[in-house]
Image (tube, rainbow, N blue to C red):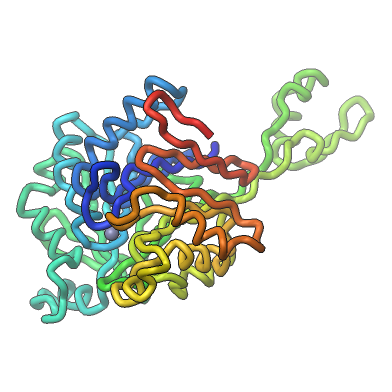
Amino acid sequence: MTMEVHILGTSSARPTSIRQVSGSLISCRDGIAVIDAGEGFQSRFATQRKRMKSFETYHLKSSKVGVLCLTHGHLDHTWGVLPWLQSMALDNRNQPLLIIGPTTDGVVDAMLSGQPLPEDTPQSDLSVQYRFWHQLGGTSSNLGYEVRWVLGAVKSNRWIEFSSQGKVVQLSEMPQPEGWRHNRIEPIPTVHTIPSCAWQLTSKARKGKFNRYRAIELGLNEDEKAELAAGTDINKNGELLLSRDFRGEDVSPLSVIISGDTAEMAPSLTSIGGCNLLIHEATFLDDLAQHAQDYLHSTASGAARTAIACGANHLVLTHYGARIKQTGPSLDEAMSELANSEIGLSAAWDGDRVLVEDSGKVSHLYWRDDGWTR
Ligand SMILES: [Zn+2]
């Protein structure tokens, strides 16, 4: 199956009359990854579910959410987490949920040794919020479904988990959502005023589909089909049947990245060597480029420079400052950077979907009150 991103909030810092704060979903073969959950996230998710039910064939069930990935601890990306967890408890969720986000090495060390957090730890560090949410009932025993609270110093790849007894334990590696076999999530360090990362969802390469109709046509028995499917050529009535003739083309891995808040050209992002879709913040226009630099955000043109450097096939702009009402100027400024590239470009509005097909083709579907249009 393809991957599809639902962008449920495109405003930076605070909601406006036309936009809500951050929160997106990536739907894939294994389930759903939620990336950030700012204020009001659960209502937007519920609205999108309803829309999908009315207009589309596949459903966005919250029971399919396997992981909540946080890009950083600023409240416009996290304030909706606990209310949403509590609503899922009221809905009798029983699937496990992984919650995962970035912090510093100092916090990891302090938590493992039971020491107070380093003095320079910002109030909005996710470790502070995890504790707060625990105190307010965000534990597996309170919620009635298993929640794994995981934090990591992303650059040094050190991961800790808040156990249900309130202890903090070290993990040997970053966990993946339970039961996910076809896709992986991975953090990519970004550059912001507090520890931050983009999240990348990558599907594994897959063999092409086995052509069972052809096998039936030739009257093959189960053993013969199994051999061909496993890649072995067989002899049938004196004729050599090549296993490769029974499979469609292999499906290459797909990869989607959602940036969170970051300055442009975050080094770990620009060195990833390609992705199908980059959804990148574009808080400012070029007139506030200095502002973007000072506050470690991006301009639309900076998002475009990043997309070129990281080898993205398509760039979607999001996370606009309150001064940006229409997306035209953002698109123009990004396009002037992309003019000599093959990179596709679009600008997100709340409720849009961005589809990545098996072939790698990207389509941006714009929400228009009575369905989506291309
Ligand atoms: Zn933000």
